[in-house]
Length: 288
Image 1: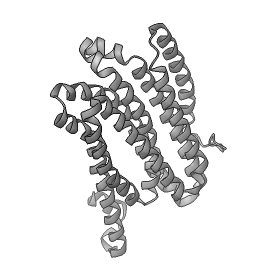
Image 2 (image 1 turned 180 degrees about the vertical axis):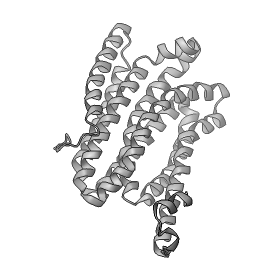
Image 3 (image 1 turned 45 degrees about the vertical axis):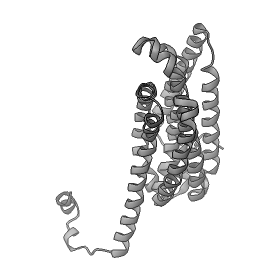
Image 4 (image 1 turned 30 degrees about the vertical axis):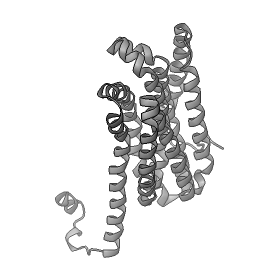
């Protein structure tokens, strides 16, 4: 990397080191490290608590649907990886561009993840039955439904999370995670012995929702122009989550198939439209 930078910037070897800038970089990077350690720890900490209080079979019944649904987050992670530098650049120019980026990315993530989460919620029992048999379908289908809700909320949380870190305030996300960890752990320790893996999935989803709300508030505080779109898409996310839970309770397979087809077709049409305009500059962000 040093060799490449030296070729791009001929005066690199003659530049001076700023201790102030170095300190700022170390602090910023340190808090990002905290988030990168504590965040994944909370994602997987629940199965450790399950193993402590329940059986190994309970760990399998919980981990399997978790690993299925968690793969959905590959898409929002890829999109947010592009959003981070774009927001950092836009903040140096004007906040209206940040608002536009925020709205576009939020729509794209919600459309894609909602469609996938809806299919997982509607056909949780059928998917597990065909893949792993009746035992897993009986014990893990409710867990898959609850985790689908959490993944939808968690997918959107990546947008305000990227805004907060791109604003140079990685300490906020680090502090949020440090505060959440003991509370989340205590909640798991209390709930799992009583409600089992369904309780664990409920706590995980509740933590994801609370985390999303806090991150949205932090993003609004740092970038005031995001107030309307951030609150609007947060409300949409929560409403979509509630709607997923409601439709997941439908017992009739024919009705579930009809709903699934409707959701997939609508999301595909809107998603293709959003994707085609994703890199095309517009004057409207879709939230007034």
